[in-house]
Length: 118
Length: 116
Image 1 (cartoon, rainbow over the protein chains, first blue to last red):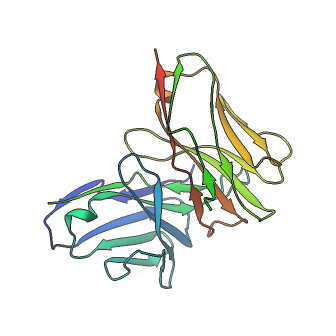
Image 2 (image 1 turned 90 degrees about the vertical axis):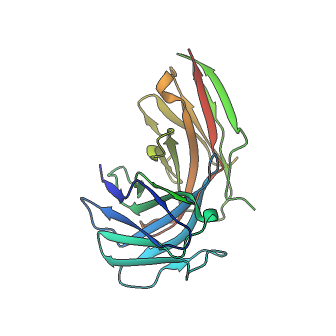
C-alpha cells in the first residue's frame, strides 16, 4: 500500500521558536495533502488542505500566519508552527489521498508528529 | 449538524467475541464513501475497511465487516473474533463525492478494549 512519512516523529521546542514538520508521500504523487491536529483522546481536527503549487485552504479558526503550509512538490508538504507556545503542543498528522484499488480513494496517513512546546 | 456520529466513547469486549462499533452519518450527497480507521496507542491511523454509497453488498476485510444500512444512514463496524491487539481507538469517517482531494469527516471515535 501507499506510504506516507512524517518527520520528525516527535519534537520538543522552547516557547517562541518555530518548528517545521515534513510530510512525504513515498511511492505516489499527492496533489492534495491534509494536515490534522489531534488532542489526547479526541478526534482528528482538519487544519488545512494543502494543494501542490497553490496556497493552502485553512479551516475556520486556524491561524494561517501561525501554521504555515507549503506544498512545493507532488511528494512533499510542510507545516511550520511559527512562534510556538505551549498551547500548540499536540499530535499533528498529515494524510494524502490515494487509490487503494478497492475504489475507496482512501487517505493514507503519516505516522504523526508529537510536538511539545516548553 | 455532525457529519459523523459515534455514540460509544468506550467499549469492552471479551477476547474471541464479536463487537459492533456504531457509526451514523449525515449527508445530502448521493455519492460518498465511508471508512473505518484504527488508531493504536502509537498514534498511526490504520485503514480498515471502505464502503461506497453505491455498493449493494456490505464490505468485508478479514475479521472486519461493515454493516451498511443506507436508509438509516448507518455504517457500523463489526469485528469478529476479537484479539488483544484490537484494543485501540476506532474512527468512522466519510468522504463526500469522489476524488483524492475531498476532505474526510471524522467521528469522535470509540475506544475499544479487549479483555483477555
